[in-house]
Amino acid sequence: MKFFADTADVDAIRELNELGLVDGVTTNPSLVKKSGRDIIEVTREICSFIDGPVSAEVIATEAEAMIAEGRKLAGIAPNIAVKVPLTLDGLKACKVLTDEGKMVNVTLCFSANQALLAAKAGATFISPFIGRLDDMGIDGMDLIAEIRQIYDNYGFETQILAASIRSVNHAKAAALIGADVMTAPPSVITAMAGHPLTDKGLAAFLKDAAEAGLKIL
Image 1 (spheres, helix red, strand yellow):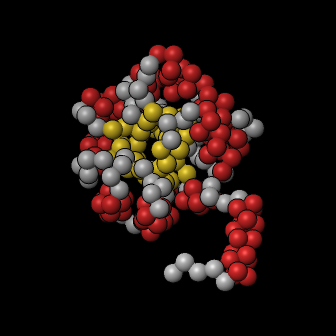
Image 2 (tube, rainbow, N blue to C red):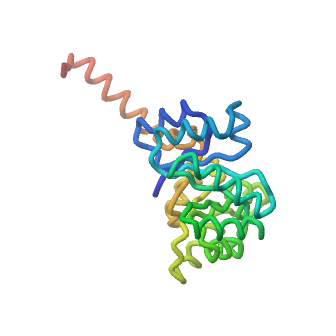
Image 3 (cartoon, rainbow, N blue to C red):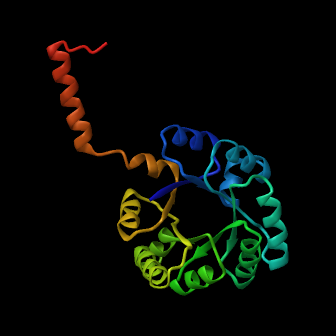
């Protein structure tokens, strides 16, 4: 499974990248707003040290304007994935940009039918939102499983990018189902390393090492 950092915080991305835990990055207007920076500027900086896909989202809602914005965003760096919403205009923009050889991430997916349409339009990534479905009392992982089955049934190459990941349990479940990619806040990715038994075991080892006067260097 690939790990994408869902943030526009350059320092947080660099930290994860140094750990070898970043295969790509996803951003959106809300995350860029939180960073307090210009969308072109921050996206260019992220692409300067991340080799994998970096999703940058259009702001327009009409197809032709989305296509124009998508072309501008794609011009920032060759690893840009243009992010478009899962609307009919978004699907039209996806088809045009994909035909031009650009990566496209179709976002705000909440149903298997929507995911099927995105694959037909040639999307590189489909982003089903797990957490937001959970908020409505719907198990978001059921959607991941449905999309996985449909894509496997017909050999679609669109990658399932599990989004709106809010917990380490979300991350594990998405991996078990077979999502190709998980995008999550840096705090969730780093939390995956934690376990109380790891902490307890390490404390015991360090205590014994100190009592025995062990030294390596």
